[in-house]
Image 1 (tube, one colour):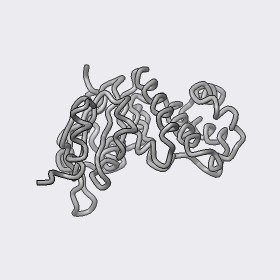
Image 2 (cartoon, rainbow, N blue to C red):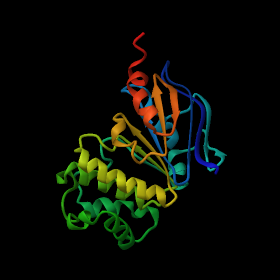
Image 3 (cartoon, rainbow, N blue to C red):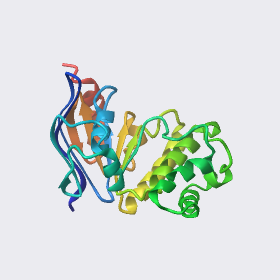
Image 4 (cartoon, one colour):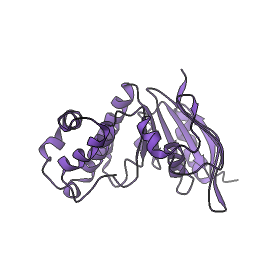
Amino acid sequence: MTALLELTAIRAAYDAITVLHGVDLSVRAGEVVALLGPNGAGKTTTLKVAAGVHPIADGELRLGGRTVNGADPRDLARAGVCLIPEGRGIFPNLTVRDNLLMMSFTGRPVAEIEDIAFARFPILAQRAGQTAGTLSGGEQQMLALARGLVTDPAVLLLDELSMGLAPLVVGRLYEQVAEIARQGVAVLIVEQFAAAVLDIADTAAVLVRGRIEHQGPPDLGLRNQLATLYLGSPS
């Protein structure tokens, strides 16, 4: 199956400092790819490149087989790329309902937006009038996911969904992510903590110092190698 999202030999930099050194990564429809690695490895930069919000120094970004280097991130969003950044991605001073209302720019009726969000996350219906910043961390992530889903994404990019959340809450959120993928969405998840995501991932890639050091199924072999991949060989 042709990949919906493809990064080929991607190099990216901040000023004179190169942070991605020829990254190759692809995600097919219905697939969950986990991008793992230590802090500073370049994981978030990879997501930003995929969403068009960080420039490519070299290499090729393709969406649905079409090269989209230099495309405006708003055009990529309209084409179905949805980035949910680290730190929830909500408006904390607005109510849950108003956060969802903000997504009416997509052209969907407000009632339909709420139907989609509340069907996926029923707890949000109970919190509709509550200020988003007063929700629990898990509920805030549900709201961020709900806001992304109403754009009807083809590609979903998630950055550190588990940050600051209890393992039980993380597990429930990732069950929802797996269900989203089963509906045909290509999902690329950045995670520092591998245990949070490997149970739902179809493929795992480990990024170390801006290079993919391992890519393949999230099997026991990968789990056993992670410490070495993150920290380097002791020899």
